[in-house]
Each structure stands twice: as structure tokens, then as C-alpha cells.
Length: 107
Image (cartoon, rainbow, N blue to C red; front, side, top):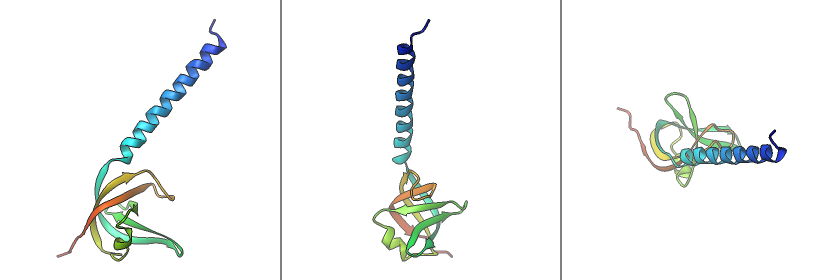
């Protein structure tokens, strides 16, 4: 017969290993660098607006980082941005910390 102490110990070990696995997955996703192309938009209502890039497949990525103010001046323009893929934030499933960008000039 298995003792209660062994069951509790086993359960705690499984819980600890699960937490470590989730943390490792989150850390990997958090540091992934990505490149996106899309249109810069301001969404929401004042004073609670958010800057996003809407990609060609209609995903809205919340823009964070030091370039946010510069990118606000480029609303409705197409840009290519490179940055760190972040965990969901402020109700947005996708989020990016922009490290560099360039405006795409249409021909």
C-alpha cells in the first residue's frame, strides 16, 4: 500500500517539474526575435489607446519599446519591424518590443 506521504511527495515533484517546463517555454518565446510587415494603427479610445502593427494575416501586435513614439507618427503607413516577441499584454494576444523598423515605400 502506498503511503499518503509518498503520494504528496510525488504530486509536489510533478507540480514543480510542470512549473519549470512552463517557465522554460515562456522564456524561449519571450526572447525570440521576429520580423513583421504590416500597417501601423492606433486602436482603442482616448485616453486608452494602443499602438499596433496589423500584419497581412490580420494579427494585431501591440507595439512596445523605445520606438513607440516614433511609430505613432507613422499611422496608416506600411512598415517592416524587427523585435523581440513578447508574452501577451494589455489584452493583446501578440506583442512585440521593436528594436528597429523601416518604412515600406509603395511603388
